[in-house]
Structures are given as structure tokens and as C-alpha cells.
Image (cartoon, rainbow, N blue to C red; front, side):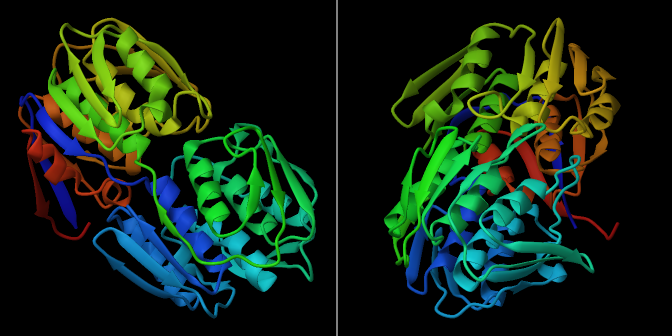
Length: 422
């Protein structure tokens, strides 16, 4: 099992290219099941989660090739059984539900897995399928759904923590083949949902309102193949913004959509960061010490929960007291004990981290618990005195394409080594 060794103290400088979005690529790959024709998807990042999704598509009957960031899928014949051994590795596997309901009228899928960051129920996905006319039950750890015919309707998808991104994706994909019109109220309006909708439109779907809280879908008789390029990953970009700032460096990020990162970039500027956007390029630096912040994670266009851990790491070495609350996943603070092992001063009050910035962190062996926690520990290691050993980096490989290579390109002292079984 790999681990990362990070030797702190290097100021990051230089330029890197941001990869395609993981959170966009996974539902887009699932959407290729909607048609028997060939779909060609460009800009697909080389991630373990992507490989898992390609394994699922192959198991379901699709012919799949992946080369040079381009995935070609031809799902001429598919079946609707996604077993536990495949879907347990990744929660996003649930996004095959909508396409299979539209294509096959049924699905048998095991409860999906993934990293543990708190309760992430699929009740809104089920509510959406039932509203479209499916009969859904749970049996033996499997979700079974069947519909003789999907029928358009009005569906409210709001939950206690806001809109559901994958739930919106699932309902939108299923609705493309339903009879009549479907209206999704309280839809997620994240850029990744909009990207999926744009791809579906290229396939012949009739969708309006994507990117807003109200999405309208007019069902069509069939969808066809298409060619599509995945949007850049705003969370990867945000992580490298923090990497530049935490090392007081000067980094340039290419292949970025700044409009997808407005909340984060504005907050970083308010803390003293110098950030300049030039088309699809971001220049990031700090001419003085950053100041503390107060922040609350929210659904888009708010601050992403996927940036919470990285900001906690940044504020750990930023003077003053910072307060960061996660309203989306209140239990998503498993990185805090590991950061405290490195000398961070963080107190937890429910879903809120109260961070007192310290001058220095110390390198230590730490354990990654989930994808974004892994990134936070690597970021902390970049400024810690001595060496930081980040274990279980299979988490980080789920969502960051070649993170060690990219950080080395910016001047970081980081290496990947093989470790024994845990």
C-alpha cells in the first residue's frame, strides 16, 4: 500500500495543469449507458474512482476503452445488475441508477460504498425514482427498482443539508427517457450538474434550467452518441490554490474555470491572497501573511464542503482564530486529530472547527481517512518542520490525478513509497 513522504519547507513556484473534474466525469460516464451508440468523453482524469466506474460499465455490458484521457464507450447491450463487489468501492456508483432505469426499466444495485465522511443517505435518489413511477424496495443489502414506464412529473429534491448533486443527476438522466415533462425543484446547481446536462443535450435530451434550482426535462424516445469534454476540476484547483498560499509560494494554474470558484477565491483574497484570473489561468500568491477567516460550507455557489479540510489545514498556520463550519457533512472532520498530531490547535464544537493559528507544524506519521482529509494532511506536510508520512493514500488517488508529480513540478519535496500491508 502506497504512502507519501512530504518534507516541508519548500516554497512552491511554477505552473501546472488542472485535470478534468472527477465529480463531473463519473456521472457523465454513467450517462453513456443511456444510448446503444458510441460516446467519446475527453478530459477524463486518471483516478481510481474513474477506473472503478469503467469496471462497472464493463460489467454492465458496455465496451470501454481508456487512453490518453479519452474514454470511448459503446453500450449496445446492457443489463441492470450492479453487484456489491463493484459498487462497494465508490459511492458515486449510485449514479448508474438513473441511466439503467431509463434504459432497462429496472435495476438491482448494492448499497454503494466510498470513504466515510458522515451520513450520506440515498433517500432522495429513491424519492426521485418513485416519483417517476418506479417501485423501489431494499432486500439483502440491494436496492431493487422497476418501472413498466417512467412518467414525467414534478419532483422536489431538497434535503436537510440542501440539494443532492448525484440525486439531481440520477433524476435528470432517468427523466430524459420518461413520458412527458419532468420538473426538478430544489435541484442542485453545481457546475458538475450543468456539465452533465450539457452532455445529455448533445445526446438529444431536451433540458432547460440546468445550473438553477429548477430543471425542466422533456422526455424523448431515444438518445444518441456524442462527443464531450469534461470541465476542469474546481476542487483540485482549489487545493492547489491552498498549496501555493500555505507555502507562501507563487503558482500558476492552467485549465481552470474561475467562475466555478468565485466563493473560494473571494475568501482567499479577503485573507490577503493575491489571485489574478486570465481566461482559464489563475495566478496565486501572497505578498503578506494571510489573516484568519470565518466560513460555512454550503451548496453551490457557496463554499464547497470538499474544500473544508484544506482550509482547516491552511488556517492552522495562519495567525489569529478561524472558525469553519461544515453544514453539508457535519461529521467531516476526521482530519482534525491528525492535524493536531502535527501541532495544530483546533477545538471542535459540533460541526464547527475553531482554529488558533500556530507559527509552525511538525512532521509526523498521519493516517488519511478520506479523500479531502488526505489532501489536507499533504498540505500540512508541505509547511511542517521535518518529514510527514501520509498513510492510506489510496484515498487521495480517488480524486487527485498524480498529486505527487504535480507537487514536485512546483518544487515540493514529496515522494511515493510502497509500504507493507496494514
